[in-house]
Image 1: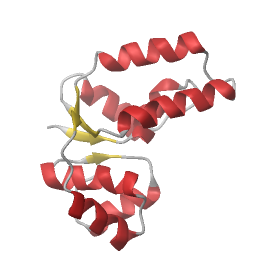
Image 2 (image 1 turned 30 degrees about the horizontal axis):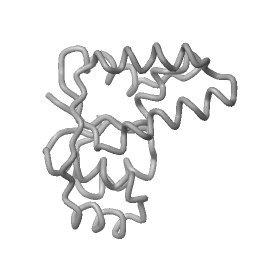
Image 3 (image 1 turned 45 degrees about the vertical axis):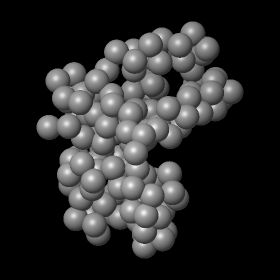
Length: 132
C-alpha cells in the first residue's frame, strides 16, 4: 500500500546516527511500494541536508549521494493540494501549513502517513488518518 512520506522520516535515512523503527519500516516498504510527498518535500529535504552540512553531520558528496539514492526510490510528488483542506487542517490543529500539507495528502489519498513529528501525528490521529 502506498503511503505519505514526511521529510522527518527521510531525514533519518541520511544520517548514520539517527534511527527510528518507523523510518526503518518506511525504508523497507518504499522498496516495493510508492510513497507520495507534497511538492514542498523537495525543498525540505534539501534544506535538512544543507543545514546538516553546516553542522558537519554530512558532507557535500554525502548530500549528493543521498539525493541520488532518493531519486531512485518510488516517490511521487503531488502538486495538487486541496488548498481549503490544508488551511482547515493547519487552523484546526495549529500546524504549520507545511505539516498540514502532508496530512491533507494522506487524507485525500486515503493512505497512511509516515512521520516522526509528534504534533503532526496527533493531528492525524484526531482526523482519523492512518499512521505508519
